[in-house]
Length: 432
Image (cartoon, rainbow, N blue to C red; front, side, top):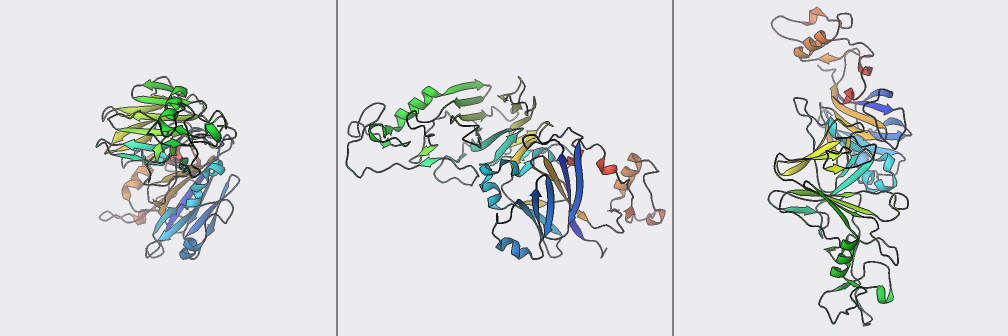
């Protein structure tokens, strides 16, 4: 019909309780709002409220410098000849400075991704992705497929960018000609062919050390736990004992922390600590290597004793999520956890008829592509949907106009739903 127009329907659900930027998917004590976007717009956040600002010229969005406006989250850009396509545009500044704005981070909700039959689809993990389980976050820094091809952020030229860059340090060249020696083995550069490096801020006789010597020292400080293909490496204090500087991840294009890699598909995760002065004041470091034994092997993640990767935090469910290997990649699937499994948004995403759900703090936003209504009455083109709604609702709640139904050829059916039907059973049903 000529008066129909494609638009984006945005539903926001905010958990009434403010708790560490989490959203309880089992709670019914939530605030619900709904709005629609017909043209290119910008989405902002003011406290717990989400508001929309329309943009008349889509070219102006690309010209504007991101981050100038306060509380800016992302843009919804209309595309196509008839403005019938929309996508969510994530600017680099949205995730570049996530360390300074943890509560304003925009995450994709994994449980909202579904197949055609309604089963959980899962999310294909990429290098640099930030995975959030409750309050616990991990970053994907390396993985290996069944062809033994390795993709790693530890390489000299990582294939992608991520908000939490690894700490790299270059070796300082000796221009003074002074004699240098290793502070651990006390051998100078003439006694050993191995190059001396300066990993911290120490000066004088403690400035340089062999890579092999400092790797052996790091191994002596490491605690390792192995459980069914999952290896967890933990350092309580991974810093210089003299100058207290945290040791870099890479120095002179070499990995400083040695990790044993298996000859099977694996994925290497690093625990993310935001505030170095509070949560990680002692420069602790956690690396988790998840190895896949076969195609049917699934790595369980959660708080329960049956999980392969265990986290004792109360915000993590007993069986929170699991990671599996399929079609040459690693997929994380949520297990209907209480606080959800999230992945940090780092790239743009097309809005389709299927719902896309994002979370920012204790607010969940769902996006879906819709068509404009006639006289505020939804229009359903599928007659099977009309029959399904007729069986689910009582005759008092549904008003059917018989004149719109033909015995030979189905035409558009108009249905009037009760006004409060969308607010019923809000404990996670808005993701279905």
